[in-house]
Figure 1 (cartoon, rainbow, N blue to C red):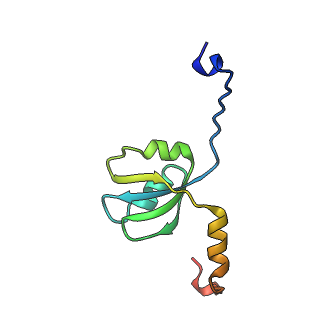
Figure 2: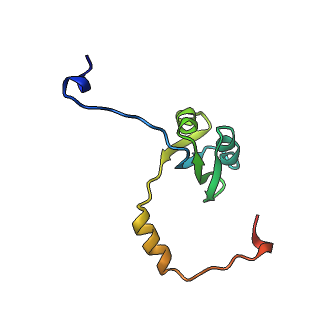
Amino acid sequence: MTIAEQFGARISLSLPGLGLFLMVSRRPGRVAALAGGQGGRVAVPLDACRALVMLPVTGYLGLRGHPELSFIGPVHLDQERFARVTAALPSVTVSSSSRS
């Protein structure tokens, strides 16, 4: 009998589809390739070595301790506060010529 069962607790672990992570590469230009190799993509490039990436949790676990990364960790956004901030920002129109 596990400790959880002794106390009547139920433990459930579910992995979400994708999470947001800060990734810092030791070499410029490697973040997209490393994220892509784990089923992720760059969401917000910050500079040549840093980006916010969308990754499956299993991809994050696979990249922890990777020799080409100096850091990778989850990012949490308070969605209510983020919505208030973005609502206060002026609207930005994206033309089709500036999309990638």
